[in-house]
Amino acid sequence: ITRDRALRDYAATLQNHTVVALPWDRTYVFVTADAGGSRFDTGGLEQAVRAEARRAEGDSWWRDLRACGMARDTAPPAPASRRILYSRRDQTARELAGRLAALTHAVATGRAPDDFTAALAGGKDWGYVVALPRVTADACRSAKDLVPTWPASFTALVDTRPTAIVRRDVARWTVDQDGTVHLAP
Image (tube, rainbow, N blue to C red; front, side, top):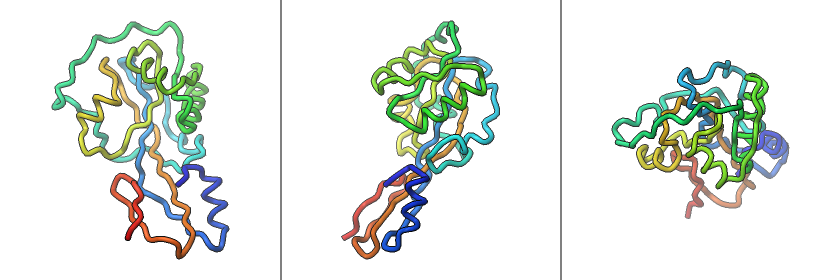
């Protein structure tokens, strides 16, 4: 399973392998406390990443979480600098943060995953690039784990999906709605 377009394209040239696009499973969003939300054009961001990506489509479970009864903190103070944080472990988030920084005259800064989670919870930076699942069985639980408690504006950037590279005639497999691959008996 890969998210790298170059690897997918290479595997497509191999005679004994099949390349299968899996469901769109992640939406990358720009999260900010700025009341106006994002003020940049999201067009063309799918070309800024190595993953297979498209413009974000469809309804988003994180748009309306009132039914979840999540307590909202007060808005964090205005940031002193225009810094966009991303998880250092997520290459697509890094590529998107770099493009957004160029579009908005900001600085993109990577953080270790735990540091990124803490920074997002604190809300002290101008913006964050976050990967959210496109489909979730329980929006309230996902929101509790992934969405900040401070009043935030979300701008959907791109949807991404992985690709399965499989040797022909080796094993049967199936794919769930969320993109999870299972070996079939």
